[in-house]
Length: 137
Image 1 (cartoon, helix red, strand yellow):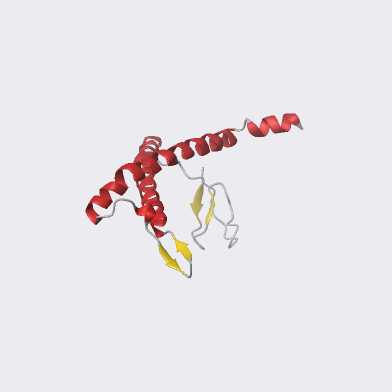
Image 2 (image 1 turned 90 degrees about the vertical axis):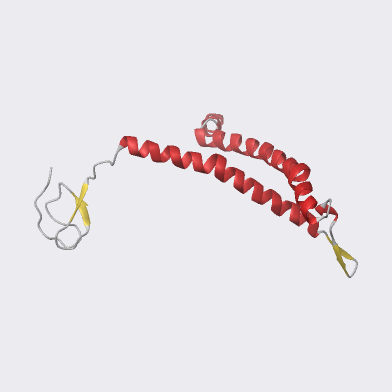
């Protein structure tokens, strides 16, 4: 059982996930500080309110802190923007460059002339409509 556990822990995807969670938590702390210390005061300078976290309304003695929700929305938008422009876009460009270098892989299938289904090139009969076809190399 310990060997199986060791094999599970040392698999690449488990380690990658653990690293991603740790870096994600650290990144979240940085973005929260960025929102709290830079974006919120910047928006407050424009809107005239110094701190959104103190905003609330009361209904039947229940206090609804909608200012915290505003801060969380600003954090979410900031995180999504940073992830998109600094992670997703560069990876998409790298994947496109990699795909161009490799070229289009040659297909092992062809189209059946009768039913237009994809069949293996070496097939002598279509597996869907049973039409006889000449095998290709």
